[in-house]
Amino acid sequence: MDFKYVLIRCTRYPKKIKTNDFCPSQMNDTALRHIGRYCPELSTLNLQNCSRVSDEGLIPVCRGCHKLQSMSVSSCTLLTDALLTALGNNCLRLRILEVAGCSQLSDAGFQVLARNCHELEKMDLEECIQITDSTLLQLSLHCPRLQVLSLSHCELITDEGIQHLGHGACAHDRLHVLELDNCPLVTDRSLEHLQACTSLQRVELYDCQQITRAGIKRLRAHLPDIKIHAYFAPNTPPQANPQPRPRICRCCLIL
Image (cartoon, rainbow, N blue to C red):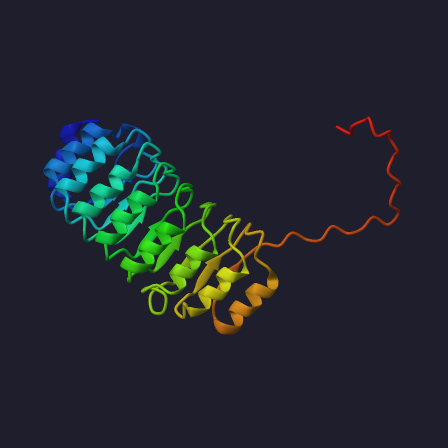
């Protein structure tokens, strides 16, 4: 990447840098170190799909851009908990964090982030496959402004984690959107815990195999205006004239 362009960009537009300003494949850690050094007023950084970006480039941004409020690094698969720790220690005004597909992030990093970034409003954690209910506990305790939370494809999340959210500081007045697509351990008990989230407007439940129509009906009874998106596979109709199964000896296998 042309580092001169980075410096010009920071001088003319000091608050926002987005992927539509450059080709994602051009952004690298060296360019990010320049941004961290010369863009102290930066508030928005969108590096979605910048696959060459790593902790080595983003940690200097966190240390040099304390006014950062929005970071989108979805599909930047090289990132680790070191980034979350740097954000938690330096970017206390952070409101939006999008890290979908960053599969190396874990509870340890989100613990540091949640305990320090109390102004978080929107978090996209889709496919952060290592996180567990522990992350939801920390968010429920320390992030009272949380409005939108995506946990789709976070397959270790259970009803206990949703219970933390339902009893958290954000539950009654703030939480508007919760996405739980393909969370196989979530059951109707989670929907019972969400009954306390009186500001909840939308819940995504696609491919949550343990969620039932009855559970959704009970949630709607408490929150009549809520929008719930779920999918239930249609029952397979019985065959009109079922054919008898072929008989085989017990020493044979059907492949």
